Length: 259
Image 1 (cartoon, rainbow, N blue to C red):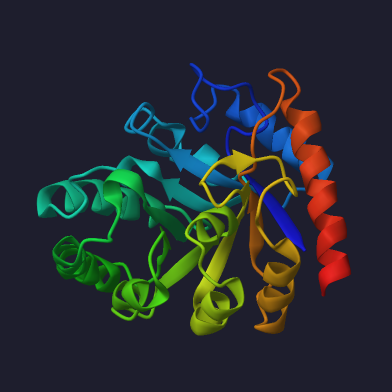
Image 2 (cartoon, helix red, strand yellow; image 1 turned 90 degrees about the vertical axis):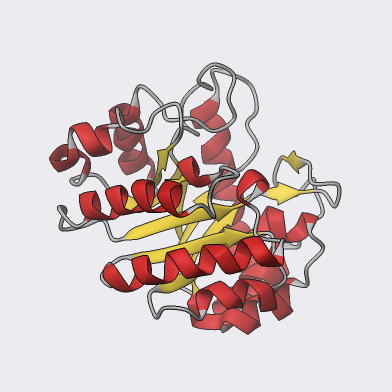
């Protein structure tokens, strides 16, 4: 089991945000290496976008163990607008093409960027398809709270379009984990680990309604060997490293019992 972590989870929250780019990002990578994490999903947020080290110090960032770029900037109601999506996504793609190692982008289709609306999803598909084909060397992985048939409308557009399976989101949507995972199979290239209740509350691992045993068994059976990214609930401020190590060991044990 290859466990990575969402950037920022090893640091105290920035300005009270659950998920924000950390100032001490270099220290986080040192801790990851020491503690056996395979790497981090790098964060690009609205509060730290163009001034993010990915753009200002690309060569240095490219030397880090990065599993994917989590493009939270696109969590915006304008995601289906051509100018907004193209300007931001093409900038990121061109930057990644200047590196030798970073080839995965995670695109959250959540909250303001939700694709539940059919018309909005159709507009998004028309814009994202040519971008995917233009940057065929980059893998675009979509994280969405959508029925698999609706998400497939996006995934089928390009060979380099994949699925990020978020265990908590799927639970709170009450989707059948086995059915969903088997439907996409090898198209799942990234997994976010978090526990949620059916009321969409993110809670400490194994205290919510997420059936991790079924998830791990099904993912193993379809041949998934990609990263499992910890995006778990925070605990006591100042004890982030201890909390994430506890979650890492818990999932490692549960995974071994499940496969």
